[in-house]
Length: 230
Image (cartoon, rainbow, N blue to C red; front, top):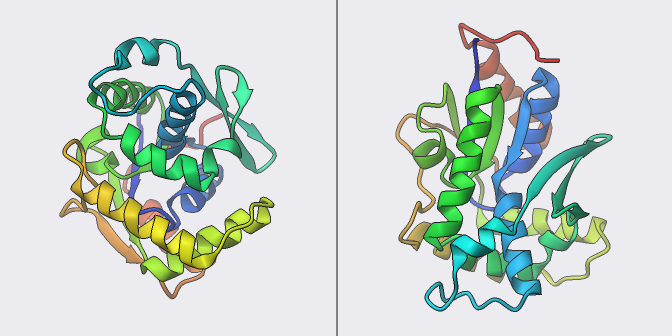
């Protein structure tokens, strides 16, 4: 069976999720939002008042209680945590900061990476995150690294939050973006990195259509593009 695995890495707000969904829809591949998976675990731990120091808790036991799945609703992919739709709850500023801490816990990363790798073995996927090309599917056929200035990414995140009815200040969102960048690039386990073979795309001054067209050009040039899945 011919598979095409597309890895989209980059910092928060660089457009990975938007592009991942568009690519998956165009080519009828499976879209795997790994960030949503970590966010969901962070939400679960926060709701259950589980400390995030990683020393005084049994993370492996907690992960056995976390069940995740994705489901499409029109053009939007919804995230379910133990059968509850948490698509909006995982996008708050508080949960974003907690996610960075949860993502440093080795047992959490191990459990989610194994699940992600299983998905990538079964179907053609578009997978976005921060360590996709470096850790999750280092043998992916296509690897991209999307980037943008922190200010532009903060503005995009602010607009997204406002569209979802969440009030926020630009300065607060920018500070959150910068803090998340630092934590993602300095964490001990699977930090955010750009692998040498990844195609770099700076989206700072580009609209979504322009970025999408560039990505599609590379996908269409792949010599063994699988037939669209049904």
